[in-house]
Image (cartoon, rainbow, N blue to C red; front, side):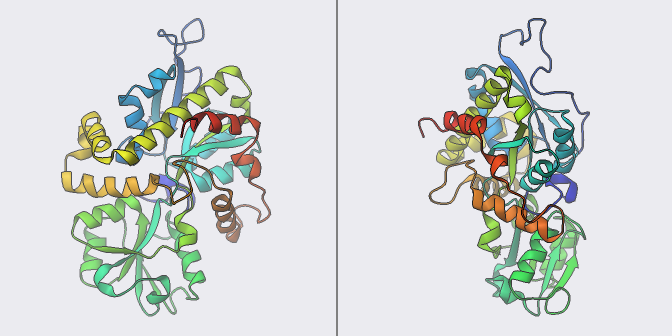
Length: 351
């Protein structure tokens, strides 16, 4: 995955399809609803459906969206950054995008809102080979860290983590671009050209399936930065239909997150049955699923999909380090407000 897949920055956050206009109201019948009477809702995704979006697939296959009286469809756009542009322009109503892109969107349009996150943990990781003896970023002094490419999605995580460990890029630690999971990165790990690697979780999982054993050395501060989150606007939430759609999407999705965490094997089978291509290579699929499940499982004291202000402030901090947003950007309205609070309350009712 390159920088277009999960977002403009590390923290957020396979082929594009034609962008369909509008989420609520798309494919409406003459009376403003679908033929079944359910509210039509389209959610734009940064990558195609698969194990990374297990809660979405579980919710659909178990009829949770149908139970909530919405007809949910998805379309794929070219990465999280592109979705950010569409939200700001008002071309879409609901989009799942990296946390960094959500913050950038908010900095350009102040009525952008986040409802919940598909992953409450960072989709980007820094990992070391288990046999390297490296257990922290500080241990990388004098070592080599591989990454996908200059400007890749993980680049800001790498820079922030290196600086936080008191290291200096290409002086006390060597950075080596080795690409995503594939022969080049695998070979660099096997011949010890690099002792650690940073990329998105599918790349980490794919290399694990090839026999690389990892130790996660991502600093805790960055591990709890949200991944892909459901974004909309107050313009949508200010309408009765938009509010109903947002509440239904959030409720069904969060319910499916709980199900996947509590019933991981059953959830895996649901995804594999729904999207057979996602599980053609069983070993690779299980490795990816383990990573995906880890990312939706919250730390103690936090609910699945729940927004934490401290984590979002970390997103601002990292983006501000590259002057992408202002360091004093107040993200409180992004993750709160009367309408968002009402959606969240309904989504977690009973949990």
